[in-house]
Image: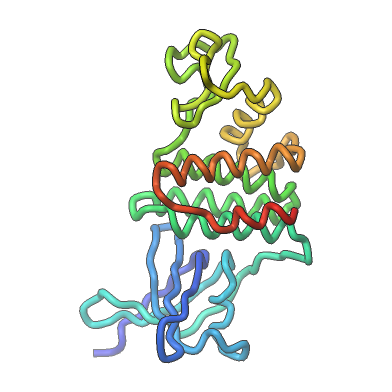
Length: 242
């Protein structure tokens, strides 16, 4: 019987050196999450070196073990690699998206996460402001994995008028009647959070956030996710340099 192989396309989330020049690659494709081993890819001259670039879109040919449980890289090619272009904001945005996806997406979220991440990459390619794109991606990924907040009305009573406060812990926006003891970040920030939750990453954005507002939103969502999941996004520290 000939060797069984499988051809797959997807996005590299991360590659982690394992042992004896072997790396484990985490991959997100249209059908969900999977991982495979790849040998020697850390060498710049390796045919699989493209697998070391986070968020590169690739085609790969994998060999499948006889029991169907293990995949290993045979050959492939990068279709596109994120263009940082010595732009720190772009680098931070890509790092945030890659880290959040690799650490937070669950098996059952895979196909929808692939569509969302693909839309984020398209937004970056067409030149959307990087931190706005990253904040929108983080907001929508948070909702996708089940930790979204209510931006349509008061999280307590559902009222849509006189929204004055925001509490991630309480579930989202709060009206004046339920805003006691909660932060009132101002109408502009509430508007920005609603925008990030609703903007379609797949089409040109109607507007962008100011750098300070985008950084605040990213930090707020990261704190919210850390509280609920215990996952600390290390890429958040990079925001201080932007």
